Amino acid sequence: MVRHSPAPPVVEAGVHTPGLMPRHADRVLPVHELIVVQSGVLPIAEDDRRFAVPRDGWVLLRAGRRHCGYDDLDRHTWFYWLCFGAGPAVDDGMESALQERRTGSVSRPERLRALFEHLLEDQQSGILTPAAARGYLQLVLAEIVLERAATTDPDVANMPAVRAAAFIADHLTEPDLSTARIADALAFNADYLGRAFRDAFGETLTDHIHRLRIDRARMLFRSTDRSVERIGAEVGFSDGRYFRRVFKRRVGLTPGQFQRLRPSVEEPDPRAVIQATHHVHR
Image (tube, rainbow, N blue to C red; front, side, top):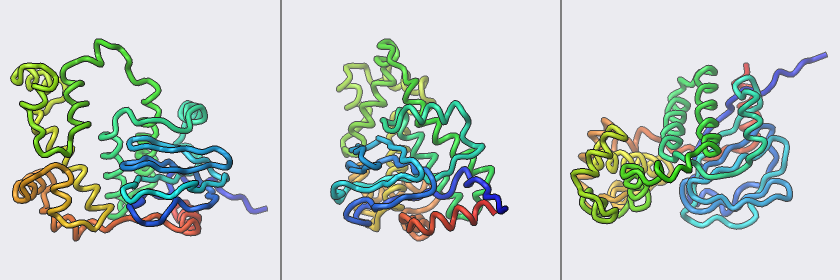
């Protein structure tokens, strides 16, 4: 009798780019698929259950069930996806938590985006070992489950630094976002808010804004074929030369060099996922 080994913990990760297809594919996969939406709204169904997943929302689609889009995608919708099989990397506690919650919002979207970026970098470079894949899977799922334990303490939620971070997240792409504007909007002294933010997060407000904008620019370079100038403007830089300078300082490459070295990762054919399952396990 031939024994079939279980699917590997991680099969593949990627980016579904805007305009790749009018609606999500209709299919049944032999692996679980986690989707984390980065822009727009994803209308998707699992069997008879429908989900409308917004930006920074996630949905976990179970292996062996029919998944399909029930409405067209708008031209701005794009998302990360991660396909994985049940295996030793998914412990019992994590599995139970994910059984209870099939969709939700990400409590630390920037942290999760960074994990996907690093996972995709290792995958594209051909250096993603099975052990590293299991580690990435654990970290990604831990960020998803973290939403269940997110703090609701009003004293913590009203901390100046946390409020500043939330304000930045809501206004990140606006060119006039600055320390003075944030302090004015939150009714804090600018120097006090700057110190509180640095003490809480270990970086200045300006560095935080730059980091998030450049992270978003990297995602746009990966998921679209837009020009350097357009992406710089879309992430909040009104000056193209300043965008290039900040990008080079943070990434170590110019935007043009990054574009040439970062091919987009498109959503695979379901048959390719099945083939990848057998290939990775070997």
